[in-house]
Image 1: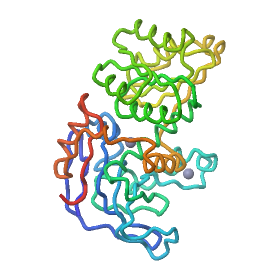
Image 2: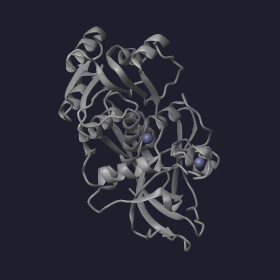
Image 3: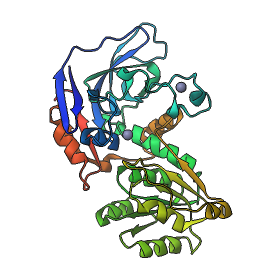
Image 4: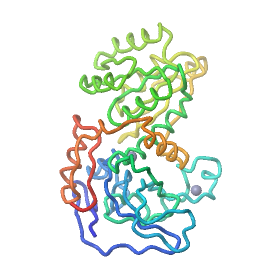
Length: 342
Ligand SMILES: [Zn+2]
Ligand SMILES: [Zn+2]
């Protein structure tokens, strides 16, 4: 079987290896597709390092090919699954308080970090979520990114009739837009790319604004809410002006979630008195819990959220370098790697 390793900045190597062997408590999955997320783009570019060599990929779908004899969850060979590639311990304080996305053991077993760009992957039963026949294995790769967006929307406490500004409408911004709309939220979107704004408009966003004209963008977001400002704002673009925009358009009691991560370490452009007097809430969200993941499985399986329009290209594993470069371009949404047999 083949596996793609990031070996150094801008270097990815596909190696032929022995197929992994499962323990009696584990499941072996033959991976079909794996999406390329910002993390993999950064690992490839070298702006983020975990360790070398590492097998990237954490948005994977596939088919079960072996089930250990002690697995009692009902998983069976030929089940089509989507994988939650975070190994959670269920016993640390983070897990026990409902924040298993921050599990203190999640990075301990290095063989369990990422690993989607591999033709076979060993997982624990709890990491394999069965999907219905009606869901394609390529669409199933959107479960992981969607689950992270659902966590972000939960932090923002949005619901029916709430106003939300999504700053940045790349793939993650669009998944925010689609899920918030499905929840009955009034969604406004800002971006500096007119073509992306068109896509957001087509997806049903209630309003869009080009943030290249900052002052005009503030006026438009305010107008969207009859001058009051939005109740919630998700920052999905690592632009330094994004947080500034958020605090210019938030209504009193408003909430901001920092969804994106940054290569540098920008600080919040807000004084503490403004924060105090307006009762603003600032949160961050990173990854997803198993509950967010399960909810995303259901939302996509039952077609509450459609994602196929966000697939900009599919490349074979042997061509993963081209796939990574395409994923880094501004005019693409998700690029999938077809990990399974070509
Ligand atoms: Zn834990
Ligand atoms: Zn992801």
